[in-house]
Length: 539
Image (cartoon, rainbow, N blue to C red; front, top):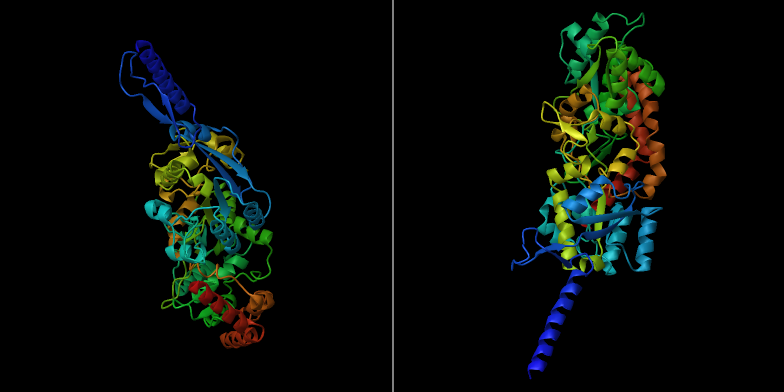
């Protein structure tokens, strides 16, 4: 009997040891490994510390073209500090084609991030219908941080499954959100000229006319060449027209009325004002015909008083001008408006971040996998998380300046200015920001000149959150048939109206232009677009 008891005791002890070894050797993604507590002594009876194996997440990027270097510093930091092992791969070819191939194959990777459009979103929802991916409704309700920049109406119209209205995607679309928007274009004015004539930057069309007249009458020639009070390139002409038309399209709040450049009644007043500038010698006579290099040369010569442009050409011009005199520069100027009309919209702010994240059903079958991955995304969605994933360890690549803003260290800035993503790929910066959340502008020194940073504030009123449903509504056969005939006609009619000898003649020509557009497809394109918007909203 004693011998049997001893044998039984040995078997029990051996079984417990074996079970412990099996538990220690289980695979990762949710299984537990045991390791002794660093504070436990050999004689201690305290329970051992339990540490999970790193969460391995295989992520397929669809629409991206660059991968981070293997085992880069950010990957190692995340492994050590967040216990997550993110492994990227790229899909080659068109996104919808690659998505359809995965659908046909009946399996998708753990996680897929793809560039969205109507077609790719539809395929992503087919993955869910086929049981390859999971619904995200409950996850998005549990982790609201993921939607803090999102437009709910846009998400419902663009991402939700048309069959049942469910969300099967984690949308990443902070584009157009004012908290993260960068303002990159607007009016510029010659700062030293304003001081010379004793005036402030214009904000209305009347003020603009008066400032331009003062420039013409009080500013001498520059290097023996006459000054140019106002010049515009194609983009400048288009955006200045928004003073009267609001934007390149103007959709009413009830989505029932739509005006474009080519059928907007406000375009007549634009033509009349431009005609007034031209006939008073305030408008560059070559503004309709000049080539980009000619336009840039005029800016860099310092002969131009006011223009409308992005900061890039203006940074180039200012670089030339300030080399000889720091006060010789163009500075951002406010939006130009007409009393009683809506504020012009020079740009709908965007980071081009329309992407979706899909989680495979196979990966989510392990509930702990899903929970740990969602915890990482939730951290990614915080300002701290998105900043860290984009900028790295504090002090390693970026340091705080006297204003409390982060700016790249000199040697890092040299690498970033190359613009080839090689440095980011080697260090892993940006790539692990899975949501592609941008950094709040007030946290860091933005790339660009002092003038560009001034524009972030001065141009803010000329930016807005655009009606996101306009573009996803798509186009149709009437658009394809007529659009190519409509847009190119604008400059032809501008030349006739603006160069007219009198205001009456400019008005007559503009009315003829609107009548002409009525005959070459404007009503058909407008009616089709309104129908498509209505159908899209009903979806």
